[in-house]
Length: 63
Image (tube, rainbow, N blue to C red; front, side):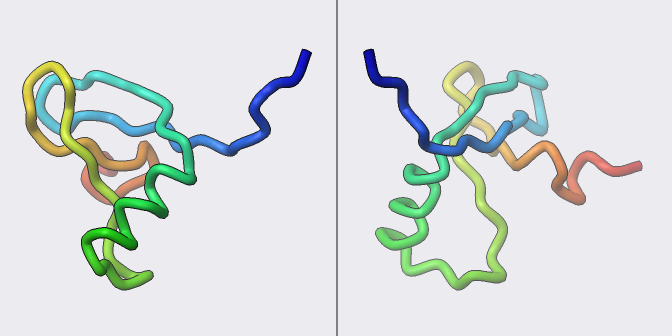
């Protein structure tokens, strides 16, 4: 049995608080498709409320 060795990033929705681990390879693919720069912050859509999800260590969640 083989297991995936891909790293993942915990993403949190800024509106509803939904949490999901997103594979690092998916975030890299999104950066490539959207022509994002390395210093641009990663974000994806929340599957529950369709607002932006950011990494858990993002400035969006620091108070």
